[in-house]
Image 1: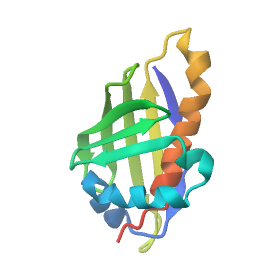
Image 2: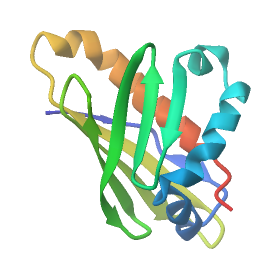
Image 3: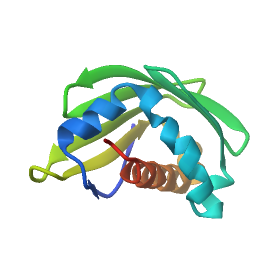
Image 4: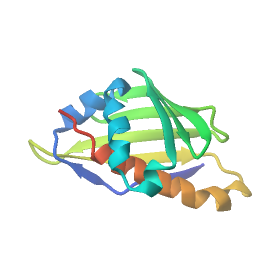
Length: 142
């Protein structure tokens, strides 16, 4: 199992505000609106975002997959499992407080890669985790 971690992102919202918005994925609909404001190399790759309370389905470069919440640790962590993914994946979004008005978050992905897949997917997975954290850092959590 390979693990990929984003850098830590600081958001100008409390840990509680971040968790409250992320624990119901319907709140991430604002990401759809912000895709138009993102750099072209990111926005062009991400298509057809759909949400419900417990899952997010996205089409990235013609490949559609779903991330479903499988665990919630209030104010600390959301755990996801990939569905319709070519490889087994789990993803965590971790949140920690910095002070009364700021929090930090990090995205971690674990993927089961065989020896042939690792060289091909290592860089895209690393970049994908970082881009996901970047997108979560621009969400308005109020």
